[in-house]
Image 1: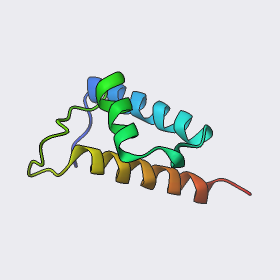
Image 2: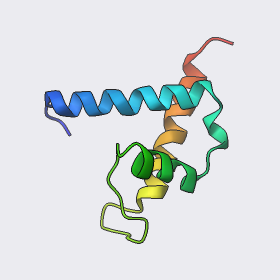
Image 3: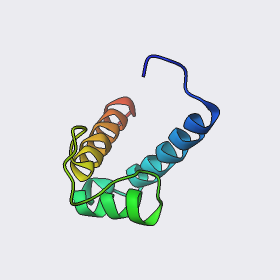
Length: 81
């Protein structure tokens, strides 16, 4: 992850960032792990995953939940009251 992102990786990251921004603006803190999995994996196909697998990279649903939480937490801290 220390190298530069390719154009397709940048495009993919931008799509994820946009979805997370929309979730932030619409109250995504209420979305559960299964809801995030359904949105990012099944509906938008932005993240690859298998809900029945815990690979060496971890559980996709849990990773999505933690990533979203960190994104929203950073947004809450960085925005003026």
